[in-house]
Image 1 (cartoon, one colour):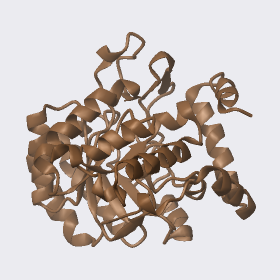
Image 2: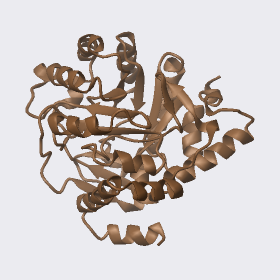
Image 3: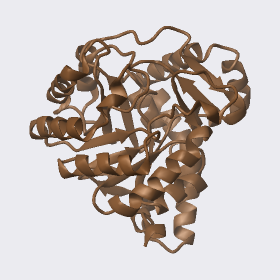
Length: 351
């Protein structure tokens, strides 16, 4: 069955219901080795030209699934079988929380975009820790995306991040610091030099694992650079550009709440990467996320300085074969350009 047929069926459901159905399917597949083998055979593309060693970790390809898709770490085995080179699970919080009121997930079909106001709905650190312990260490790098509980005042937010780093330090390959989601009240207020300075001073001594800061696309270039520079100075090993946008003028169909991802975010995300890479490339690992739905776009981000790229909305609109399609064409383009490995292409448009 062609994915367009499946998509037409899924799109008859409320978006969150459709996601839940997909999660049930991927969770079920995770329990059966034969099912995972079938998925790997049909959806995983392997080529040494795509392999990179970053943070001392082996990434078989540069395509990752962004945080928010697998909030509760229930689909990791199946996502690996679908060909991803790294998986970011979460955002998780110390205590479980139900998130914002429904409806809170919307399709912007004409623009191949998604708008979400989920609000860090997750099972909490205790339950998710038990799931990760059952599979860790895993075949590919898994990133733990962490945030604060909604009920935690900003003045006490550091404690939530400290607790999560302590709990997951031995069972994750990297941490992603989420202070850029628009769906937790006042969370983006933490995107200030003073908080980032205090946060990294507090959590850096607690783990030997790399720590990555995920930033909003809605700040100025100057403020974005200021925040990233502060984070790097205090031990950040990488930057993810970017989270979702709250620029609702991008679509006449947008709601006036939540964050927009997908094609509407593409230009903003790419511009921020291009501008920040001029200063940050070579000083930290850059990961690009936002509006990437094909190999041409992924390769452009890589040549602009991103070692890794992440997708989410493109998975919904393009289907489970998207990793295979991107990676197979990436390998062709890299070879055509005369490179022996993808790492040689990283940042070439900056040089």
